[in-house]
Image 1 (cartoon, rainbow, N blue to C red):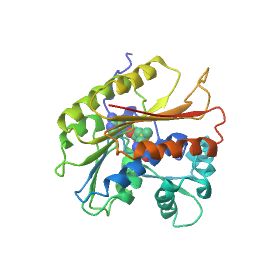
Image 2 (tube, helix red, strand yellow):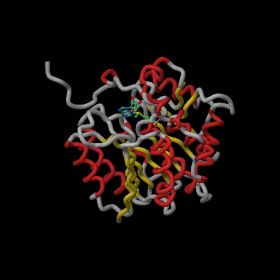
Image 3 (cartoon, protein in one colour):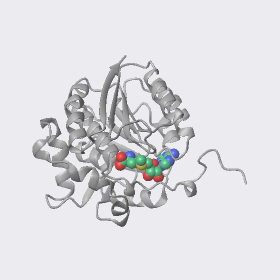
Length: 287
Ligand SMILES: C[S@@+](CC[C@H](N)C(=O)[O-])C[C@H]1O[C@@H](n2cnc3c(N)ncnc32)[C@H](O)[C@@H]1O
């Protein structure tokens, strides 16, 4: 039987973020997201937050999935707020809020980080194809009238949302890269989204893997030439011979101007806090 080349239905999705919630990649992604949103909500005009791959919205750190991998134990559980750079005060306050100030049993997914910072007039448009995760997501936000959860391919759905009515948006593109073609698809998707709405803030998360398609992808992202960009990477292991994901990165198009400086303070601290002795970090900006 021929293997399907493209995602045609949710039945093909096997990735569940519950196994990985709170790991080093989530920390890089969600810290970048929160810092960027903090800047964006300073302006009164409403903001539209679009999450093309939203996940379940919230994760139990004592679930069987989290315990099976132990990724959160090596990730968020290692962080000590008292040692953290001051710019992370809001990030830690939101994390405490999700846990009602008690022991850290829950970890927010990207939609919940965003929803916690956004204001009543702001909007959240969340795409999730996995039926179970979508149900959890819908339940999470059932009383939040700002939120619209969609059972649709986020790559496809993004087009129809741009430009947003308020002409202000942050778009997070955070696929699991289960499908190899995501690497070749995303640069074209970002280009198309930018053509529709050039002033949006676009964030693309990507894994660092010793694979040619990944290095081609990061080079392509840097060369999009669509305006100011910021590339942030956190490597938790040395690259040479690393068999799996040795870190991850975020490409931010139209980044808030203070974000680079903030991440220059955050990334070395994060690398040390995670005990990533063989790791490294990168902050690179361009136009
Ligand atoms: C890495 S997880 C998202 C994590 C989430 N953004 C967070 O930071 O908490 C990727 C999610 O995308 C979903 N997914 C995969 N392909 C999709 C697609 N084409 N459109 C929408 N969702 C998709 C998967 O079911 C999975 O829940």
